[in-house]
Figure 1 (tube, one colour):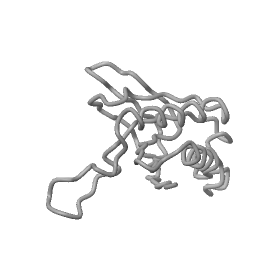
Figure 2 (cartoon, rainbow, N blue to C red):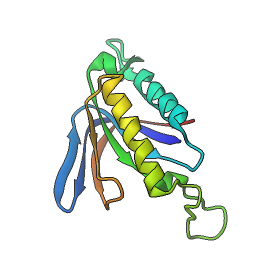
Figure 3 (tube, rainbow, N blue to C red):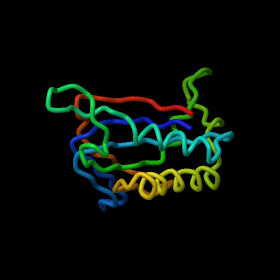
Figure 4 (cartoon, one colour):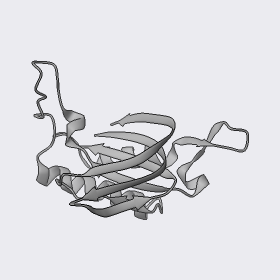
Length: 146
């Protein structure tokens, strides 16, 4: 499992000209699932996201977690995180999990962030063409991999 974490000032996802998810200050997540991922991977990545101390404290030091500063999460499914460009110029997505497996684990990931860690979690539409509009704060961008 891969989660690209981006600290943001605001973020929204648009599907067919309609905003389907929107947050103010918080984290914008791109979430990729591969064939071998299990609930253990989901739990690990959710715990890492919840515990990341990447928000500035009063001294301007990255020392606060999302929970500390009261932010939200915009989570977007992103199979292209498992795109391979090793051969040729057209990416191969054979390492990405099949949609029915990926959807289940992606939804569980969001559920855990919302229930176990009490975050407000907005999402896009799994498998849809989406437009993501956000302001990366910092910029701060990190990759979490299980």
